[in-house]
Length: 209
Image (cartoon, rainbow, N blue to C red; front, side, top):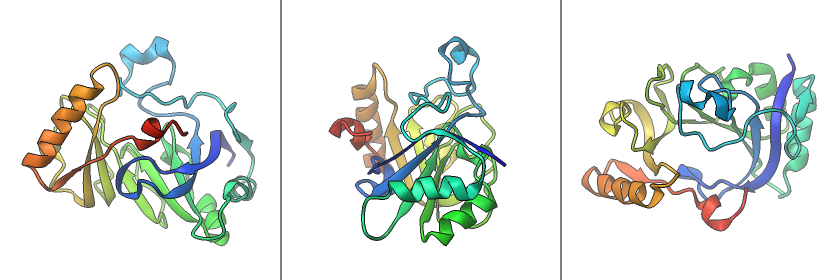
């Protein structure tokens, strides 16, 4: 199969359990919860996404005809000497991540992480799974390394997820006009429910991709 990629870039992971870790980000084009176009936002299942995943015109983006070709492009973006990791995100990466791509990345000794909305089951072999549930979307991926819940969401309250089989549970304040208030709410919730940890979007604070 071919792969539609919005962008590939090297940066620091800004969120969740791996905050501060250098990584290559592989942002796939396309999502199953929103078209990515503002004209369609009112009808989207997820109405708060702030990510541009439309098209293949970003840094390092394009259409890659084979898993080997894409894996080579990803590995070339890794600028350090060791511990290479790629974070597959989107959009929704599990629309495109397959066993062939995982095999090609592992052959290049890259650790593979995904950030998914949890509406699709992954192929075997992913090294780190981060699930970010969305209200009104069917959650089928109910186990993994990290559950990172954008907060608050009506219909996706934290107590709905805390019994799932994840190692870490994070609340991440919803971005937007009420970001400061949402951060205060998330902080208070974590203090009252210590199973949950606070995740901040440090890449936005630092002004990096």
